[in-house]
View (spheres, rainbow, N blue to C red):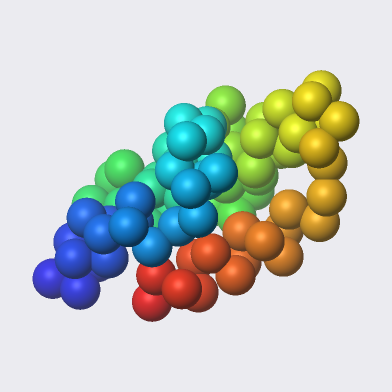
Length: 81
């Protein structure tokens, strides 16, 4: 039940720039999906999947916005727990 609650409030907890980025929002949602079948199958998949972190990082690089996204992502996910 706590996963469903956390998943449903994700848009309220994350910063506006995250909520407005569908790729990043999808990444976060897939990492904490209440249904295990809808989550990434592994840490490697969370990084390399079409909806994964590496794809989001490519988006940042293309926009010249690359940063230490791993730390930012970890911080945002910690706020959801």
